[in-house]
Amino acid sequence: MIQTDKVLDAKNLACPMPIVKTRKAIKEMTEGQVLEVHSTDTGTTADLKAWSESAGHQYIGNVQEDGVWRHFVRKSDKEEWQERTYPFTVANEKLTDKLEEPGTVLIDVRESAEYTFNHIPGALSIPLGQLEERIEHLDKKHKYFIVCRTGNRSDMACQKLAAQGFECVTNVVPGMSKWHGNTENTAGGMKR
Image (cartoon, rainbow, N blue to C red; front, side, top):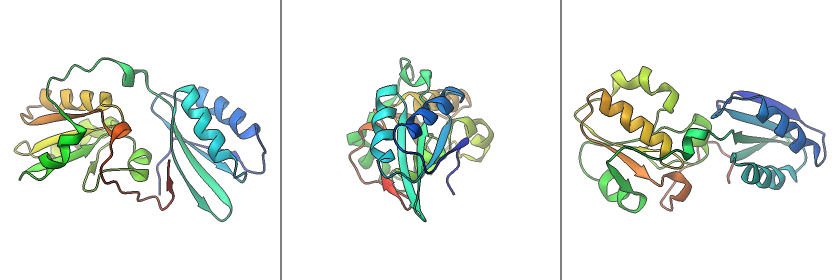
């Protein structure tokens, strides 16, 4: 099951009503939260993708079950666009080679819905908001590579890990928004 923060029922509504309702629901949500939109209008997929992009939000993906489309939209977070400050980075193109080294762990700090629809095989999902509570389960002896959508949430995660005494932590930039390697989709639906 895909974890979301709010569900919007837009079933049996035609364009433009699913977008109108989505826009209103997103405004009421906190940055970084994920909205699940239920729709029976097949045109909603293209409409939600286009609206999300134009509004600066992230269309994560969708799943169709019994004639109902379940769309997932993440409200953009202002922190994603802040300047990165963590000094140790690796480019997307170099990550695959780094992951072959012994003792390496890839942590994906995006929200669980983002991870479910599109993640690097073998990545461990620890959303940024859960990192502090799960940090005690991580072994400081490993080399950690941290990935998110744009490199900014992963930057914050790297800083948190370094502050807790983790010595081998590297931010993956620019992250999943520009990842061209293999990915997995464990939602059973379409990737964006």
